[in-house]
Image (cartoon, rainbow, N blue to C red; front, side, top):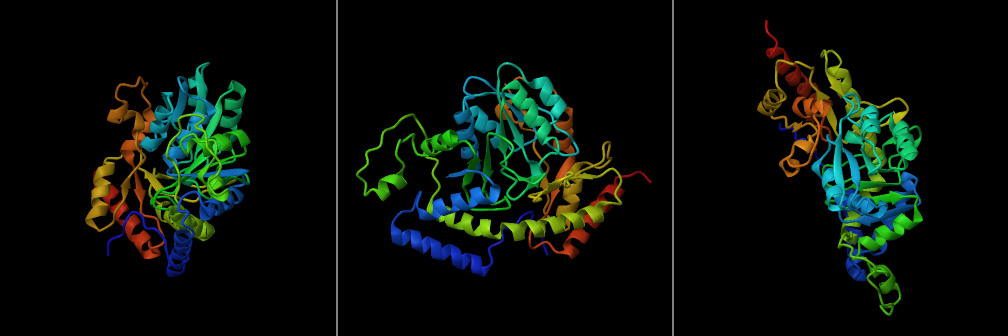
Length: 384
């Protein structure tokens, strides 16, 4: 039986709860920025320990709004090169110039020493990405470095629902954080995103920017019977989340602890099965940290005689669907004209890493088979 790379968990009771809330939204007639959306925002803020949560149309929109709110237009934003393209694109859309930085191969997160070399008087913000749901143990060092230089630290927590470090949830380390509800994320809503922050002014501006820059939200006009006249204080966007999306997100949020527990169990089994393969590096909990294991990546040994693509082909031949590892955004054609220096760690990782299937339908037997095929592919490439 084929093992897919990802699968969303929606048991019958969750589908029934979602349909009930959708019916409630349809009955009320308020399909956007309504009561269900507000309930999701309140619950998400409580779950991640922040004063505010602002629901938007996507994780990319969430990150762009944050970067606009902290004032990056015309200045430089530092982003890790080993991240999904949207991290860099959000900074570009917010009017920033990009500076790509290399990563630590053990954590896949920004390398603090490389970051220190990159910061300059024109740096407005640093975006830290919690790759695969793991918060780097260097997060406090990076936060202190940014604070000392007067640079805003922004978290791209698209992967990190429910992840924590040193007793603090993802979203509590920077000025603000963006989360995604895309179907490959632990907490899936089809589309949608969330901004979390303790900054009252930033939250207020985020709510304004998501709704065309209006001074009064649609929810406020609805509550007042539509007699409040809005003003357009700046040119914002249509980045609203519908209550239909929010219904899915709210049910997923309620199931989040159980989903994270299941993923952590599978990740521990993978690590145990891979322990005898020399030179393999995988993501793991940092000291004092708890990852949600949004993905389980494997970095092949340096100088491995078998390519990452050959390993993936061997898995596909056995009806196992891996994904390629983290991309090197600075090498994508859209940024071909951007000045950048070689980033050797990122470039090795993007060539030599893959992501193994990890979701609620992957059984222990599946994991044993996956690792067996991977090990056989590696052995086949070693000269006898």
